[in-house]
Amino acid sequence: MGEPLVDPIIEYAHPELHGGIGEAVVGGYMYRGKALRQFSGQYIFGDWSTNFVQPDGTLLVATPREQGRKLWRIEEVRVAGNPGGRLHHYIVGFGEDAAGELYVLVKDTLGPSGHTGKVYKLVAPHGS
Image 1 (cartoon, rainbow, N blue to C red):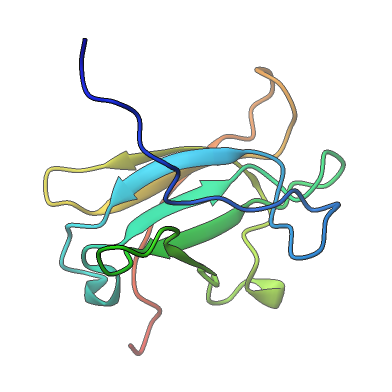
Image 2 (cartoon, helix red, strand yellow):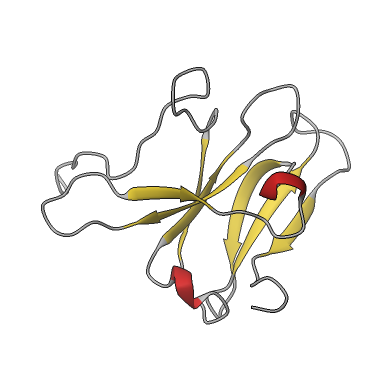
């Protein structure tokens, strides 16, 4: 039987709509590491890309709301040192190590082919 489903806690529009973020949610993790304390207890996830032509995934963080409030607050995580703070890759997955630090898996081609895959560890910008 299990537990009944609950209403969504995170949702956003496609890029064709006002305020839209991206094409497809890529699940992530609640942050439990020590390197990015500002994200402690927040859900870090992503969106695959803003479009199908250029790789342009979006790193996102969702903050839980107080009891009784429905949707969590979503903000874009800007990438230091990248033009416009954007990732400039398709996001295809996330990983977590034993210390609770997070990794984002990306690629620059559509579909299950190519040799452009990379794994980035999420770290604080230099000088932080």
